[in-house]
Image 1 (tube, rainbow, N blue to C red):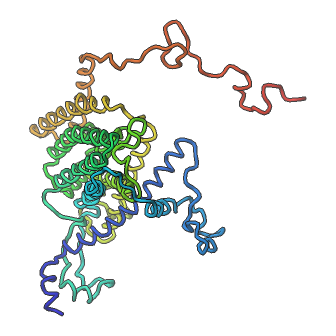
Image 2 (cartoon, rainbow, N blue to C red):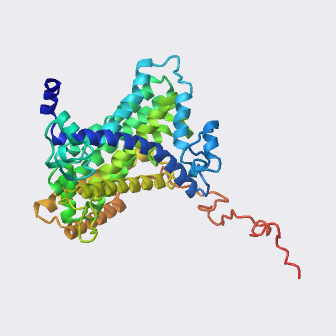
Length: 467
């Protein structure tokens, strides 16, 4: 048996051992997290719209033998936490329909093409920083069996990430851009005009917004001087988070990340008012569900990338009993666990903020999306790169010099905007009876005039209380 394990022992080192476990755990955590992000979005939208949201489905799934356990028990209701699992069962049991004249091979391939980049992009995220891994024989859970299987590994520092590669953020940027192929294939292979238009919109939008996304990332890399993810976090731990020193690049990157994930207000590829459902109109069952899983997985990866670049990754300037668990220098097991929890918490916060944006801002028109990208974001991102290059060349890379430079850039952008000609094609037209833009000489009044309608107590009405 030893001669069969000998090649494996020579192949597996400490970093590969940790990276393999991180990949397996992270994929399953993200898949479960994606299911509950759908639940969280429903709850957030219900709070914003003054509703209750999912609050009925527990973990009994309506099955008789589980209802016996859950009647007025711990499984009943449970704030609707069983809703994502019930939705998953529903998608698995629904009919998988394929249009008659669709390209069946590409029609089936499209959901796979869109979900794979979403689930491999997070591989370079250093969730737990650097960890001083003990020898595998000293770990009680693994013990001598692990040492017999893998050999004498451990006893050195490893990066708690799915892949410790030198290309770093370049890999993530390249993988994220592959998601557009799934959208395009799904839109074209469906043989539907609505799906085809949705695929065209998504392609043009992603190509347009990848330019300011890459330029804002370039501004960060110019300031940090490295493409290694853990080195970017170490720079922020030592010099302050980049959201403070690069606020313009931070805003540009966040806007472009929303557009790249097809999130509102940039979800024109699936605008139901115009395209029924967009590029996934003809899909059903699990193939339909994979498109939504990919969208939320892109949200998680994009939020993790944003946290890595601008929010210090796992770093927080906090000490517990004089011990800084979240500093890059802390390589203990406790520090690794604390860093993973902080990183995941920041990602969850950004995901919640993206959901609040969706249910707050209306969807932009498609021509407005293109105008915003080409006439605003790309010129501003070019200016940010030039400004950062000048500041780095003169050595003014501290928080306050960079913050002052960003303030000056915002003033320049505002002045340039006032000098540019304004389009009159989308000006509001004054209307009679309008509350917000009434015709000249009129007052728009939309509230009711009947006193009963203005009364907070409709049962009592306006009659005075009896003596």
